[in-house]
Image (cartoon, rainbow, N blue to C red; front, top):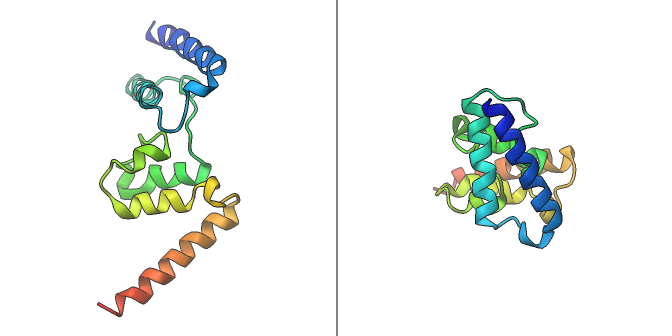
Length: 127
């Protein structure tokens, strides 16, 4: 029963989003709240993946959010949310892997992470 209700809500929200693209932005708090709530309900009730709103993150950003800090940030749905978690390294990685910053392929993402690791390793010796 809850799955049917969520599917109706999901469809309505998708229709609203499609009709109002200017009202849905990465920093649109209401949209992000709805995305997060829907994802949480889906997980709590073990619902199918199609009952989930689109996320405003690249596949690489989603992978970082899912695995960084044992999944502490798996609920993140947009880059804007990353600034509020209080973890500078996580935020840095999410920005580095943003397609708007030129990270457009798997190779780009791996190279950026490798560069970051190299730079951090170099800094280890100056402290």
